[in-house]
Length: 278
Ligand code: PGA
Image 1 (tube, rainbow, N blue to C red):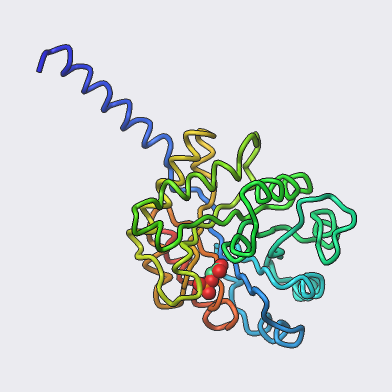
Image 2 (cartoon, protein in one colour; image 1 turned 90 degrees about the horizontal axis):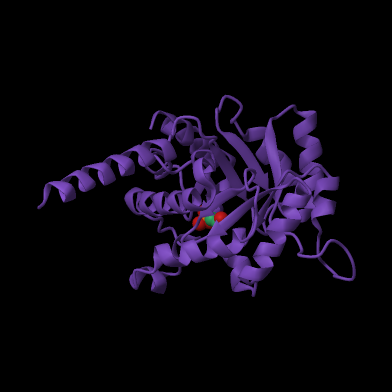
């Protein structure tokens, strides 16, 4: 190797290392644990759940996404009990208002004090939601000051064909296309095959995808990648939460099944705190 080439290689490596450290500072990122109750819970069960929940000491932010019918009563209950738990919806419509029977707009969510909204959950994608619709929904959410929780993830076939990073990256690029300020966005990596299956991604596999997502955010938005929370979802349980939370690019969880049992959800929130010294 020529001296010139050798010097070039050293410089290239030094730049790479410097960028890496600069881009991925893991120290100050917000941690969040989000419950996705899906089509479960009644008012009575929700009240009992909140009374049993012990997440007050947690340094992680806790958010509950109940069905629409419980958003307002839950918000009122949390306020009355002085619990610092955020409230999120599970979906919203692409339009601002109008003749859309059975739908809910971002303005309606904002109106009742909702702060977060799930967008592009795989169960909604399976029901026909396209990347274009997801993009519109994210715009509606941002316009009204709601934090969109953007769900991305591959199917088992895509994973087997080693297309995971490509699929996730494409979903993300479509979702964020043309958006300048994404500082209030939260990303949830949820492999489709892990949702509700009892089979979660291994901490190492999840970490690899989270890191790829952060790199992709860095390419598009620079150092914002340091601050953007990337959550893992898919069969998170009290037994696997700690190992997942210890991964440096996993900033918390989006929890389905295990978020319906107050004790399990409390344990997951606490396990997430243990991951703080990553
Ligand atoms: P799960 O669901 O925890 O039951 O796998 C996660 C989700 O769908 O958000």
